[in-house]
Image (cartoon, rainbow, N blue to C red; front, side):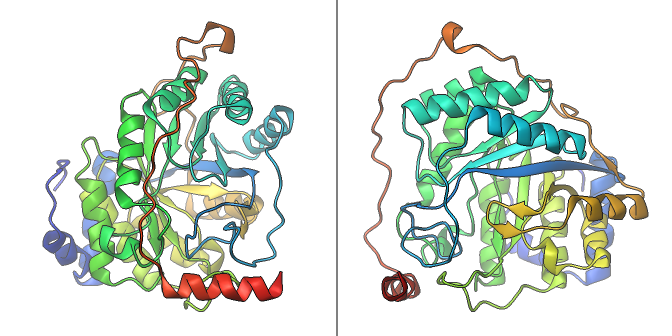
Length: 364
């Protein structure tokens, strides 16, 4: 029950997911305690360093330029602004800062150089640094690693089959290729997905197959509950139930025993009791702060009150892996190559995405 496997099948994962609830909870909690301190939770702060204007058509995302969602966009933040935000996050108990930019993929140039300086600045604060910047090449991953990046987030979102019902502007294999490029460095991988997008239970199991059969498995797996934003194609989706969230967390814990399972988007819709069940089932990481890129998140003070109530302690930075060394730009072994990779643009369309795009045209 405690060994890490890389050959899980969809049928096996479905069998776990559909177990009687109390039995599932007990098994997940048992696995969790074999690999982790059940009273320690890693706390990350998610910072949108460049908001809105994305060219992708992700059905869940308010940052897609083609939808009308009243999201206030901003250009890339300065290094000084990001450092100030990181200091505030550190004071509030976060051990990691995850910087997100609404890009399809990383492009060599001035903006990427600026992000590399952000990574250097935060690593020097003795905080773990994570980035989510879209697809990236092996050379770009190596440049991030040199700067001191601790983790790279690149979610699979759903199963390969259901992915095509949510996104038409990029391919599933591109996600896997980006993770593979990160694995060619010493940077850890953060990759998970979203439930509540209209997918079937089989799709949730399919996503876990894709993640668990990676070798090594991701060091961090975010489990997000869809936050339906007005103007996006998924605006009418009903909130996922807490029972589904607990089942997903518990199943993830069992099939990926050493991974940190992150309770991510959707926590504002959960009670403390619901979150406590998720922690009991194996979640041991959260995002703190009042916003997750563009959607609401519980107040950090409320989170700390919940931690106190449950007897939880924030995880110290670099507990799971030693702090990366920062190489200054002038001493860098890797330079910009001006790459222009041919990332996939599938030729299918998604009706609800097209309808949301047409509706946006009438509102803009």
